[in-house]
Length: 278
Image (cartoon, rainbow, N blue to C red; front, side):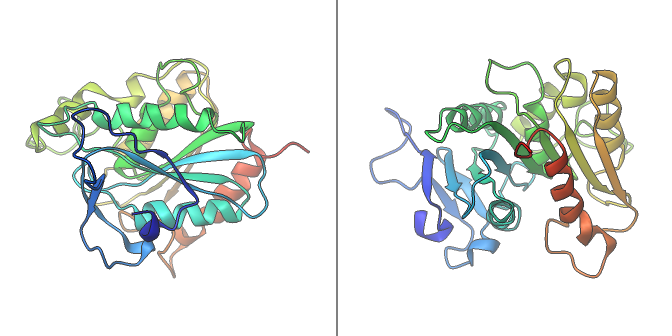
């Protein structure tokens, strides 16, 4: 796995007693021969955190969480590719391969893995001045969950949330009439239990939010809910809504205005607390 991800280090991969058979891979790829930027994780036995170091470090780090609807993980387009972009900006980037909610792991497994990832990054030998999170799609939901009450050192110093199902998958909060429960049941339980816009800690850190106004998968209501909740909690979030863009636009949607969002986000990162001093 280290070769396929071409990472500098792994911070999580500590299978304990009964967690994995000796020599058993931590996760399985949908296509083992896919290019790093196209990797899709199909199943996860235990979480792994891959680290990418920049050529010119700015002393900051970002946890990267891709999407996939909590049933797979777009660890290439929304993980490795994002990490490479961030290292180009001077950030250490850490791509999380988290477990999925199912009958074996339970609804909270992704949350547990994200919390452990933040703790591992905070404890990194480099001693980063600030640690933030970038999450896209379901990874954005998971990233937003970190903005709630957690043990000291878990909450990020800043967050980038893209086209994430914040709470419209939760029972009683859908915007799609007669929307059936999600499967597996543990996935629905995850969304029911963890609703970031209702579970924010006070005085949230800076948050950059980017969505497509006509997203056919994730209703734009999610962006408005998160933005309003952050403002109500005392935050000053930055919200960008592009009228016409596909779901999962990531970093590689050319010829549309949404392709400019990484440039806008880079400027925001320089402006807020995640930017190096001076």
